[in-house]
Image 1 (cartoon, rainbow, N blue to C red):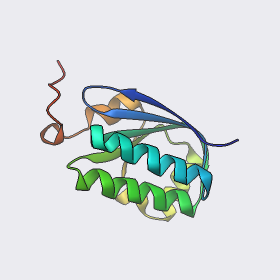
Image 2: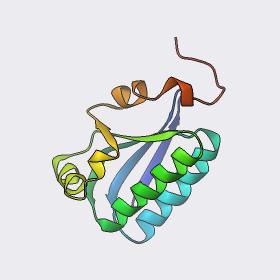
Image 3: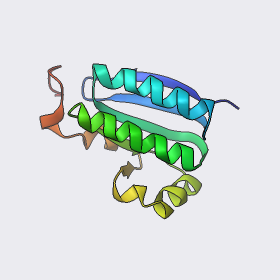
Image 4: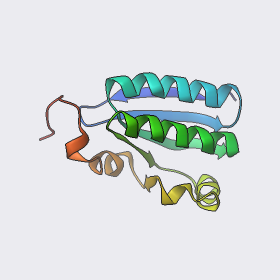
Length: 124
């Protein structure tokens, strides 16, 4: 199944729901290009991996590239709802030491740094 993404724009972050596999090829190309466009609008991004079944080294590299783009734009990248298989891959590659993963999208959004938010107002 090719990777599908759905976007939810919140005031405090952009949530990208990923459905399928994050593997080298069309999937990582799609994810990288779409999220880079979203970072231009809001550099605070949460990737919802609840429906991601697998990630390979190309996917890990893509996550690092997205993180770098977000940080360069004054934001950050958080992961939410990763399964055990994805967690294991990210742990082995030590990416979980760089990226933070949260049990829910709400926790990931709440963990966004308030000083990095673009001028879109505050939650509350």
